[in-house]
Image 1 (cartoon, helix red, strand yellow):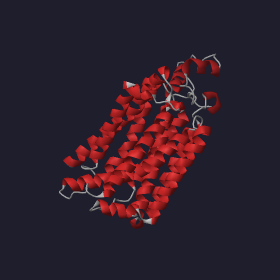
Image 2 (cartoon, one colour; image 1 turned 180 degrees about the horizontal axis):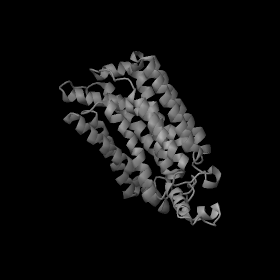
Image 3 (cartoon, one colour; image 1 turned 45 degrees about the horizontal axis):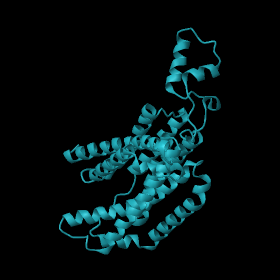
Length: 346
């Protein structure tokens, strides 16, 4: 591995560590802010006065900057799949810090999400070379991408004004869908700004063009919307559920938006396209497991919630002691069912 790739690998791994930890820090800040003020899940903004939430926000920004910088040293095929590490970091820290638990099938769902996302990213088309911000603007104003952007904005507005009041506190997909849809547009604008900054540093000033300001405004609007509804999702639902689903939807929609805008799929083989479709199916399966088992107890599923519980029972059996306790008694001592979505409500 070249020295540049090593730097990119280090930055990408660091990015995943920071971003994964930021979910937990922000969750702690949101819980603390909810004790003394109006919770974010019901429309409050008291978390803006909570230092711990800002610490999580700064941690996330550091992670995003590290991820952006990694692309300057290593190819996307190396950097992007490592973003899945943030899910593992978030899940481990949620287990240790927040005492949140995932059912065994939920763990399988996480693995499927990671495998599916990695499959898509590894077979994603290469980005085309862009020489000016005006070229990005031409791509962004073509009919196909304008149709996609219009669909995204319309769907987000419908979700915000119709579905959020009715299902926002009971269905995790509502908040995450808003974040992911807006995120796909923000990434396209961030790419445009990155190109503008890169070309400007190379001596071709792109900041004088009005298109650069438009892209910057789109980034600001999309990021603020993302952060608002991500806070609501984190404050309302289990972090171990929010993190992987958000990663899957955000990654999938971003790849789709990039393919429409840059038309990279035109140069792919049938094998690559089929592989990407298989990745999407894997993601859907993992997302279904995560969503379907979030409120499932051990008795309902017929499976042990933790590896620790299984090992403990196996150990008792191997020692020949068995146990005269009923399964319900064993469950009450050794395991805790996955918390319900409203478990953090005061």
